[in-house]
Length: 581
Image 1 (cartoon, helix red, strand yellow):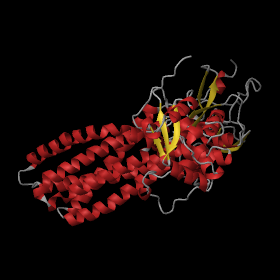
Image 2: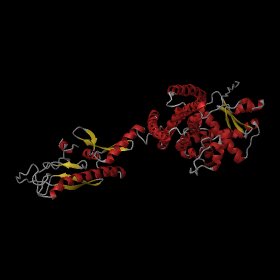
Image 3: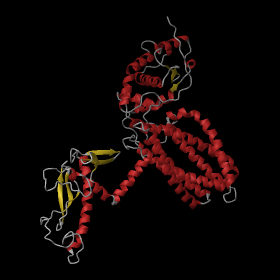
Image 4: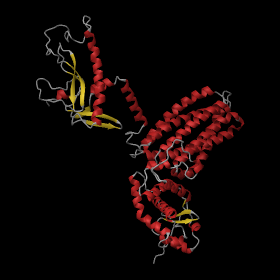
């Protein structure tokens, strides 16, 4: 190929066509640094090449105004005006320095402006340019005709930039991102992942500081320095592992509760963990109660560990926008290790300053605990859960019934309290803005339905005669549930074949019943009457059968996962048997 030798992106080759064949090859890319064949009397000059994306300074060596004639001077291989030091001419001293400075300036300006202009303005320097995207990092590739491949553009510019502090910082930042963040960040995760990770990092540091203070207090309580360290190690093993196993076994049966309200349970686990740390710090003041305090604290920490591990999976599953569940977990563990390492170092330094003073230890623990809980609260508020539990589903359905549109994930998560069933435990930050998109009627409906809903009711508790039973069975014969109202409760009897999708459908009917009660004034007149034509159960079920798929599609369009209801129903089930005629 005619231009193979002139178009190679090598450090010492010229991208310009030779003088012997001016039309054999054209400039394919605005190379920044070019070294033409050096003539003996040539002087360094700075010129500018104009490309499609703008004008960039280009340093060219050679091609001076004298036409490159040497005139047979023997002043060295580069002639009298070469790059050597000349004690007789002070002006020539600045040539090497100016050349180096101009090179750095040209390289820096080109590398920063060319890619920015090409990507921002949508202008490319050449049709053959290819951008390689890796997360937020963009690398320009150009064709190498000699090897029939694409190579990284501006090789000399990249080599020069290695010497700059800004590039060194950028390389360190890229390394940290590769180690701590999922590949393809931020596109491979959801938008709330970064806020959650930052807040979790700070709380991890605070947690480790508390752990160091608590460990020091335990050692002082058993007589550190008095030969009691082996005894303390044995007691700590028994309390931490033995009693911790029992607490985990007892708490594991509540696992379904963690799925329904993971934010609230996670915050409760953090409170439990801090309470355990506080008890351990108090042990030097009550050395005779060391075993009892240690046992309670060990059980509390083990329970907190179980809840934290269970709820962490719920959060990571929501973060994995590209089904990269395992990688999100792995990066989360790496982030946790860094937080723990920093926290242990700060904890050791703080412990050395405190010494054996219990009062100072408690004061420091109070400050660290406040930081820990505040960061936890902020991290949980930044999470945007996409699954539907009873509260979130009621808020979505109520807003749909009132406005005809499903609310966004961000708005619903911002409004959801951490403990929907316990109003006085709902912790909201003072500067947190309440939603202005969701209507007050929808918020009130979601809160009230959460309290009145009873999934998995016993059939014997909601019916009192044969007429009610036959009416309910006949109305709901094609559904996986039976819904009626009893003593102000929305009672949902689940059939043996009931699926999470059926439970979600029953909750939509509950919301429509609530709307009929509040806005249309249609109240319950007994199960048998409500099941007749024109009764509230018959009207609501007919509406649900007609509109349920519509609300599902509308909810999915804004990001909600509508494959079922995340709930903890009572274990009661029925198996209706219908007589065949």
